[in-house]
View 1 (cartoon, rainbow, N blue to C red):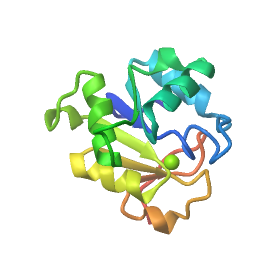
View 2 (cartoon, rainbow, N blue to C red; view 1 turned 180 degrees about the vertical axis):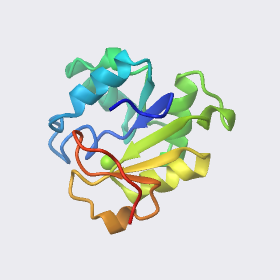
View 3 (cartoon, rainbow, N blue to C red; view 1 turned 120 degrees about the horizontal axis):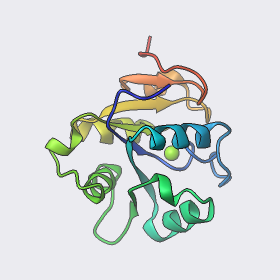
Length: 152
Ligand SMILES: [Mg+2]
Protein backbone atom coordinates (compact mmCIF):
# COMPACT_ATOMS: atom_id res chain seq x y z
CA UNK A 1 0.00 0.00 0.00
CA UNK A 2 1.51 3.32 -0.99
CA UNK A 3 1.66 5.84 1.83
CA UNK A 4 -0.26 9.11 1.93
CA UNK A 5 2.96 10.97 2.81
CA UNK A 6 5.52 12.53 0.49
CA UNK A 7 8.25 11.97 3.05
CA UNK A 8 8.80 9.23 5.61
CA UNK A 9 11.43 9.20 8.36
CA UNK A 10 12.15 5.73 9.72
CA UNK A 11 13.47 4.66 13.09
CA UNK A 12 15.98 1.84 12.78
CA UNK A 13 16.12 -0.50 15.80
CA UNK A 14 12.81 -2.23 16.43
CA UNK A 15 11.28 -0.66 13.34
CA UNK A 16 13.33 -1.58 10.25
CA UNK A 17 15.59 -3.93 12.20
CA UNK A 18 14.58 -6.61 14.66
CA UNK A 19 15.05 -5.14 18.08
CA UNK A 20 18.64 -5.52 19.20
CA UNK A 21 19.38 -8.07 16.47
CA UNK A 22 20.45 -5.99 13.49
CA UNK A 23 18.51 -8.13 11.04
CA UNK A 24 15.72 -6.67 8.90
CA UNK A 25 12.17 -7.13 10.09
CA UNK A 26 10.42 -9.50 7.68
CA UNK A 27 8.57 -7.49 5.08
CA UNK A 28 10.12 -4.07 5.58
CA UNK A 29 12.43 -4.33 2.59
CA UNK A 30 9.44 -4.82 0.34
CA UNK A 31 7.83 -1.71 1.82
CA UNK A 32 11.00 0.34 1.40
CA UNK A 33 11.44 -0.77 -2.20
CA UNK A 34 7.83 -0.04 -3.09
CA UNK A 35 7.73 3.37 -1.43
CA UNK A 36 11.05 4.37 -2.93
CA UNK A 37 9.79 3.34 -6.36
CA UNK A 38 6.66 5.40 -5.70
CA UNK A 39 8.81 8.48 -5.17
CA UNK A 40 8.45 8.80 -1.41
CA UNK A 41 11.42 10.67 0.08
CA UNK A 42 12.83 8.63 2.92
CA UNK A 43 15.39 9.06 5.66
CA UNK A 44 16.53 7.20 8.76
CA UNK A 45 16.48 8.85 12.17
CA UNK A 46 18.03 6.70 14.87
CA UNK A 47 19.40 7.21 18.35
CA UNK A 48 22.36 5.02 17.36
CA UNK A 49 25.48 6.86 16.29
CA UNK A 50 25.42 8.27 12.79
CA UNK A 51 28.57 6.32 11.92
CA UNK A 52 27.07 3.01 13.01
CA UNK A 53 23.72 3.70 11.38
CA UNK A 54 25.28 4.55 8.02
CA UNK A 55 27.42 1.42 8.13
CA UNK A 56 24.40 -0.77 8.92
CA UNK A 57 22.30 0.77 6.16
CA UNK A 58 25.14 0.44 3.69
CA UNK A 59 25.90 -3.17 4.61
CA UNK A 60 22.25 -4.10 4.16
CA UNK A 61 22.34 -2.57 0.68
CA UNK A 62 19.68 -0.05 1.66
CA UNK A 63 21.56 3.16 0.90
CA UNK A 64 19.71 3.78 -2.35
CA UNK A 65 16.39 3.96 -0.53
CA UNK A 66 17.33 6.76 1.83
CA UNK A 67 18.20 10.32 0.98
CA UNK A 68 19.76 10.74 4.38
CA UNK A 69 20.72 8.66 7.43
CA UNK A 70 20.78 10.67 10.63
CA UNK A 71 21.86 9.41 14.04
CA UNK A 72 23.24 10.72 17.25
CA UNK A 73 26.39 12.73 16.89
CA UNK A 74 28.19 15.38 18.91
CA UNK A 75 25.74 18.24 19.08
CA UNK A 76 22.81 16.16 17.86
CA UNK A 77 21.10 14.38 20.73
CA UNK A 78 17.49 13.47 21.41
CA UNK A 79 15.16 11.96 18.86
CA UNK A 80 13.61 15.32 18.03
CA UNK A 81 17.01 16.70 17.04
CA UNK A 82 17.76 13.60 14.98
CA UNK A 83 14.46 13.90 13.10
CA UNK A 84 15.22 17.53 12.33
CA UNK A 85 18.62 16.47 11.03
CA UNK A 86 17.05 13.70 8.92
CA UNK A 87 14.60 16.13 7.34
CA UNK A 88 17.29 18.70 6.74
CA UNK A 89 19.33 16.04 4.96
CA UNK A 90 16.39 15.65 2.57
CA UNK A 91 16.33 19.38 2.00
CA UNK A 92 13.32 19.83 4.25
CA UNK A 93 13.72 22.76 6.59
CA UNK A 94 11.40 22.90 9.59
CA UNK A 95 8.72 23.91 10.23
CA UNK A 96 7.54 23.65 6.60
CA UNK A 97 9.64 20.52 6.14
CA UNK A 98 7.21 18.55 8.26
CA UNK A 99 4.43 19.00 5.70
CA UNK A 100 3.22 15.69 4.29
CA UNK A 101 5.84 13.90 6.36
CA UNK A 102 5.54 10.99 8.78
CA UNK A 103 7.81 9.37 11.33
CA UNK A 104 7.58 5.59 11.68
CA UNK A 105 8.92 4.16 14.91
CA UNK A 106 8.40 1.61 17.67
CA UNK A 107 8.97 3.81 20.71
CA UNK A 108 6.92 6.40 22.56
CA UNK A 109 9.98 8.64 22.10
CA UNK A 110 9.50 8.39 18.33
CA UNK A 111 5.88 9.45 18.67
CA UNK A 112 6.78 12.32 20.96
CA UNK A 113 9.59 13.53 18.70
CA UNK A 114 7.42 13.33 15.58
CA UNK A 115 4.82 15.50 17.24
CA UNK A 116 7.42 18.03 18.43
CA UNK A 117 7.95 18.87 14.77
CA UNK A 118 4.41 18.31 13.50
CA UNK A 119 5.00 15.06 11.64
CA UNK A 120 2.38 12.34 11.54
CA UNK A 121 3.44 9.73 14.10
CA UNK A 122 3.08 6.11 13.00
CA UNK A 123 3.74 3.62 15.80
CA UNK A 124 4.75 0.11 14.85
CA UNK A 125 3.84 -2.73 17.20
CA UNK A 126 5.61 -5.49 15.26
CA UNK A 127 8.58 -5.47 17.66
CA UNK A 128 6.47 -6.01 20.71
CA UNK A 129 5.74 -2.48 21.88
CA UNK A 130 2.23 -2.66 23.35
CA UNK A 131 -0.30 -0.60 21.46
CA UNK A 132 -1.27 1.27 24.61
CA UNK A 133 2.34 2.51 24.96
CA UNK A 134 1.88 4.10 21.53
CA UNK A 135 -1.58 5.47 22.19
CA UNK A 136 -0.42 9.00 21.35
CA UNK A 137 0.51 7.93 17.82
CA UNK A 138 -1.74 9.09 15.00
CA UNK A 139 -1.69 5.63 13.49
CA UNK A 140 -0.66 2.15 14.60
CA UNK A 141 0.93 -0.31 12.21
CA UNK A 142 0.81 -3.93 13.37
CA UNK A 143 2.78 -5.66 10.59
CA UNK A 144 4.62 -4.50 7.47
CA UNK A 145 2.12 -6.37 5.30
CA UNK A 146 -0.92 -5.03 7.16
CA UNK A 147 -2.76 -1.72 7.02
CA UNK A 148 -2.18 0.96 9.62
CA UNK A 149 -5.12 2.17 11.64
CA UNK A 150 -5.93 4.83 14.23
CA UNK A 151 -5.31 3.82 17.86
CA UNK A 152 -8.50 2.53 19.44
MG1 LIG B 1 13.35 1.92 17.83
